[in-house]
Length: 354
Ligand SMILES: *Cc1c(COP(=O)(O)O)cnc(C)c1O
Image (cartoon, rainbow, N blue to C red):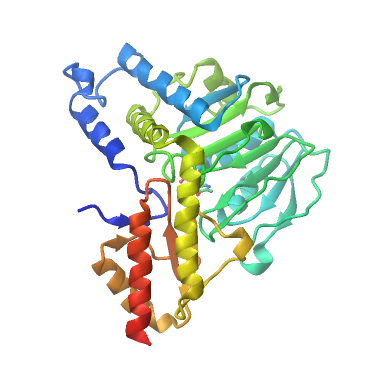
């Protein structure tokens, strides 16, 4: 029996993708070798690269003048790569959560950082809005989904400067207009595949000569020129992403999954708001459809609640160590049935505890 996996990351993957990956790990395309053993320059892997890239392009509607890269080092390496390659003098950052904050701290190593808005004053429980974006910045950096505190940008700002967005925890969860962004990055392990690969979607013409020395592996141009094969890419992680995106396409793509994700979020937050024992932690209009943070009004019940959820096969709902409480991550691959199980447990818990 599969668990009801509400883990925040690495997150749940579709069963069909796990099965395809398991089969490929044993014998890939009946070639008598595992996907783990073949050359990244073989024609069998070449087909995987082409298919994964084309799925990213199709599912997100990536325009032709963008490159799609599969890199390593996680989203955290992008925190540095972005300013290394794009920060000439000054960049604007929106401080909307833990990850956004880490990104801006990293950028400070490379130049001037203008923190144009922050929700730190209220423990990152809302998404900053209505800020001015200075026209003299090299770029604006935003984080579409605040994985740890559970808020999500429902609208993206109109920006006079190039927009860089960390979409690690909600990429492929809803349609986005890629042409509004100059660079999108995402660690795969939340909503796209397993850990070990980082997706970068970059507009080809934003890279200009920078003054600083940038190591070869940390230059976007290296990977654009090398078609993500400058060095050995994370072959297996890319394969699992491909299988995950094939599943997404098979169920109707991002507009179909957006509806399912909305139904899951409505069901879950509906329970949080109507159940006398629980409360949400974020501004309602900014609540994330991916990561729902919630609390028991009486924290003395926390341990008992963990026990009953565990007994129902629910895992991964303990809140991030920096926030406490609970967090239900409802990534694409989490079936609505799992959310029904969780809300049912919450209902029964309230009846029993009343
Ligand atoms: C998880 C996460 C990160 C960090 O990702 P790594 O791949 O572990 O470096 C960065 N940003 C966001 C929004 C995340 O959810």
